[in-house]
Amino acid sequence: MNTENEHESVDLVDGTVVRQFARAALLAALMGAAALVTIPYPLSPAPVTLQVLVVFLAGLYLGPLWGGASIVLYLAAGAAGAPVFSNMTGGPGVLLSEPTAGFLWAFPIGALVVGLVVHRGLTLRDPADVPLPIVVVGLTAGLILIYAGGTSWFAWLIGTSLSEAAVTVAIPFVPADLLKLAAAVVIVRSGTIDTV
Image 1 (spheres, rainbow, N blue to C red):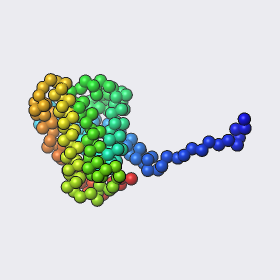
Image 2 (image 1 turned 135 degrees about the horizontal axis):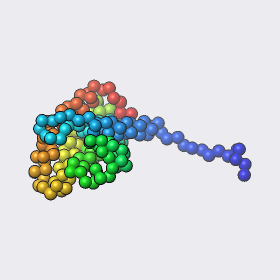
Image 3 (image 1 turned 90 degrees about the vertical axis):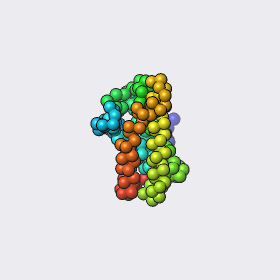
Image 4 (image 1 turned 180 degrees about the horizontal axis):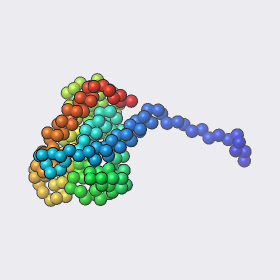
């Protein structure tokens, strides 16, 4: 067999896919870093992190598919043992037995919904060109789904009512998360980040 003249053709991956994957990996890393930045919060014994802001940015700039995928990549890294969850923890136990793991599970859904609302589907558009009310509705819908997932999981795991769970793990964080929502709007309106 003559191997000198045989060549296998390899199709290159489209540059847009490479850029989106790189951005998804970057957002996954940023999500891990955001878990480590904690801010003491007077309304709760648990500190505030910037993770919800990163979820917002993932949906806004990567769209529903890549935004959700970036957060799934973060969860996969944490499940594999990387210390990317709060208190520098990792491993599948965090995702399966922690009372607040429902928030982690809801993060990709939040990014997906933000992306769907803001981009009006799967085709990316510049979020800076999207009318402000649509951006705010998208971010709010994502936040509500994150709260729903986190509160439901907490209630189920702890064995308490949804209303008691909401008072414990959601309602105290509304003011801080509204500030993150406002920060996401400011970042979008600044027009400094390109979608593709």
